[in-house]
Length: 425
Image (cartoon, rainbow, N blue to C red; front, side, top):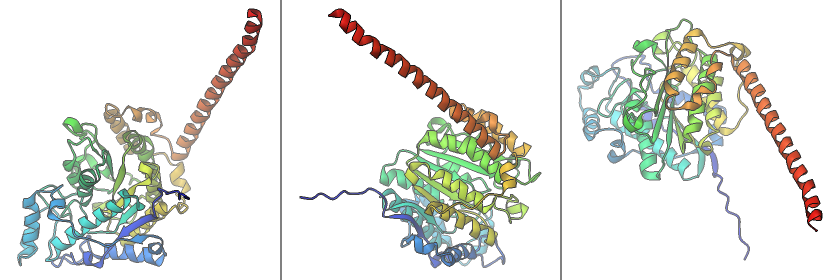
């Protein structure tokens, strides 16, 4: 009988989730609130306009069960959110928490956002899709086990990481958080857990930027020591950080540690509030959409390309639409948009160099691999690439010389062997 070869390649390259039901969560007490429904509507519409949605598989959304939400939250927290969403006193409840508002549909939208991320994780981990995009809200990375915080109700990515371990048997989950604000909730969820590596790049300003957590010395505790990495930019906006700094961080810290960790899947807390266009209180940085695409493409080298992007923050609508589009194009395998030559030629600013050097000094105790490029943190992307290329050529040349020497030795030994045999006769 003829046997057919069964290919293990995913059926689709990228899947995604989006549903207008998640637009229902809104602030009815404050006009112009930055965490508005238009955030996901505009992202989805731009993807449709540019024919990107037609190149991906849309998955049906679903509600996360209470059991699933309780992977990262207390049952009391879940019941609290369910209960207050049915009350008339929503304004008063929102004022009790830090930067949170409530709506009668908050619980429904939050459980839908969390469950939809799980849909994508299932699709990727069963091999039906290589990667996925979650256009969801409300965001999640500030939500703690028993506290809503910073526009966040349930921690979508933390729930997904626990779910991947419990339901799919994964051993190593990498969470990359490039939202300009530190994901205090995600850090807390895995601070003593060696199965999940949480790596955050965020504005910190010595604890003076929201939420104030995420200092470089916060590395995890117990078995989780070393599995929490914070690249905590300081120096305020003097100058505002941009592509040069983020490329340097990825090159010298993020990718070396990620490769050493060797994850089974990568979950990205994809906040786009580091993108140019956000006012200082919401970010103030100058990262380009192209840089977000580059960071996505870099991560695709790992975990056989199993990368899931889940929307977190980002409030300037044109900026977040352009940035999300670049990430999706990267996942689809499209050519990357060019990063400005001025950014590729610009060394990181001194404040960023100081942060990177401090982070390397701290994390080298847990990840010796970061020492290799420590001497290059002050170089521009192009200068660093040239040095790495030269070093690679040197290593290749040395390896070639070693092989030539070995071949000469083997040839000499081979040529002597018949003589020995003749003499023996």
